[in-house]
Figure: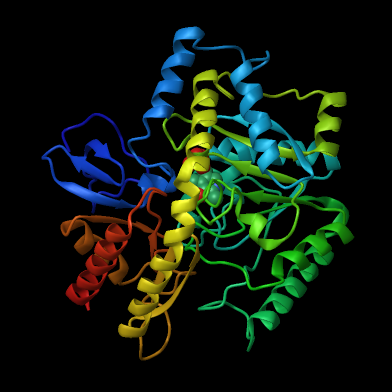
Length: 431
Ligand code: PMP
């Protein structure tokens, strides 16, 4: 590409296309080719690419006053904070804004360590929590681990095993048994680490970039009980799972548990402008009120971003969530057909408008490469490349054993059928 801008997650083998225009769920490259955006860019343009009221709200805020110090008050910031607190689980009452999802998780770690006066944070293998120094240390992506550690070796983070069904480390016959085994394992890790040394457990309620896998029923309720028993804060990383992506305002709301903090970014403004943050329990908010918060960022809770957030909340409630809920079963059914039809599709899982299609060798039932060790021969990337040639952009998981579908919430039924039919053609082209 003739550009001086270095792309993120850049790999010389697949130079990126340049996107210059978009409408609703479709993006266009510089040659005018249209692509159905079944990745909502980076799982973030939840309201689609043409939500004029977000643009208008940003313009109005920029005309009134474009910037107010993050150490001062501002009406757009206050309004968005109360809208989010009203929609979050009941015990969560206050918002500490950041700019990105990584920084939201950095802030959650800082808050948890100060509040608990304990150093360690627990996170899952096969998770993604960001790219900054601390957040990349939270991330349990085995495939890029070694590379990432060259940039950010931070200590004090202990990983535990996720409750993975397909290709996971547990040996359970039922989802209930899997929930129990995975929770028992977590408790074992906590006892061995020393409960008093652990400040918080951070987890995605439904994983995103590690593959769209959900937890078995009852798992999160047990995790909540264990956290309560050992006095560990539970932090739900909703950077992808939030803002209607999995059917609710926040993914953890489907699991019937109340976390102590929620971290968010991406969909809060539908990615029209960067914004992230942490929603805290009233106890943590009171602690911060008494102790003060000695850290912050210039652009955290930027008024233009908060105005975009307020408008995004309005558009979500004005039909977008409803559309997403109506069409989630359509996507689920279409993908169930793909799982039944192709023996290289080992499993399909997800929730709402976040789904992963997991590929595996039909002979052995194993992934085409060992995600814990190396990338090996990877046909999943080839399926995505075939799909892009046919005009659909799908997401990738890290490790890359899955193709992820995450369209904007304004997607139509026809677009879902078109994307799944391109998925079928692409599987047939590769296998
Ligand atoms: N947490 C999760 C669950 C994410 O998926 C991401 C980004 N994909 C992040 C945190 C980091 O967010 P950002 O890229 O905005 O820093």
